[in-house]
Length: 412
Image 1 (cartoon, rainbow, N blue to C red):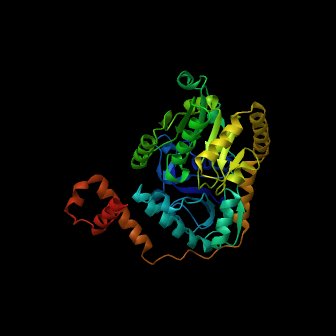
Image 2 (cartoon, one colour):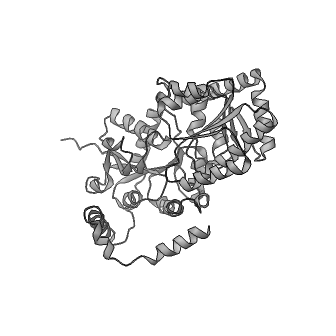
Image 3 (cartoon, helix red, strand yellow):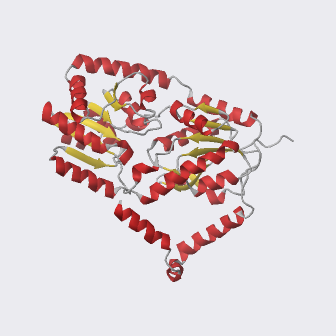
């Protein structure tokens, strides 16, 4: 009787709707299942729209055997990550990079902690993974610098089907006019520097074209304090025509790309930056700050700039938009880069790396504390109590660390 085929599962902290990691996870799942693997997406949390595609990490602990392969998407510290480390299976790590925690100080206390611990938690995986992949060369180099012995690149090959939907005509009604539309798509968080985008467009309006608006499309959930700082900046500058839309639907996003004249990115830390490729796909000239993985993602196309001086950036924007011929040349270069990217056979790359992980020398069993699984069981019991009898926690004394962190956050 033939031995059962090893299973290949994926695990990650959270499966988000419409984000780059979530889309890659779904693409990998399709490739694995088409190749005949039994494969689940294992998560700690998931967007409600995607929960039906996932299983809870606590329910899979006893289902993963030593001959199985776990593809661990590492992007932040989490319980799911720590449990994944302790399981007896083979592991292939895909590193999506972790934003340096200092970007979130004074803005999102929990995320400071998660990013800090995430960067620390990455290091023990050096002796845990049969293979470690970065989803860009920038991320692969970070793995190599951290001491991972076997690294490679699983390139992001975005799926653009979410942009092939009928556009929301209300966006056209609002923005399809004689004005110049400068667009950025991405979460409204500090490392993406929407504050600099506001300064740049404010300078461009003052120096070159008053009939210009900046449109920021992306979630700010959990970052309401930072959103308030952005509104304060707009008021202090006396900036006008700054449109902060929050998270948008695929139909709205498609329409925003349709009405955009320029995609402007000021992000200081990106592991890849999928919206750059979305703008390439929608044939919009792209200008981006040359930091982290952005130059690699742009691959010689678009316009890179290396200054944060608003007047200088405004001048580059003007040079980009003032000549239709120059804009056409920029888009033609972007078309060539996109064609190279889409020519890659993503499912084949995934399956080749899965084969390498199975063929690689087996790493030693993970070193975990003797009482790890006892603590895991106790944590699960506490979670059940927290959900079913929350009043039980009111009898506990306050954690003094909460007061210390609150004072620190207030000072920052």
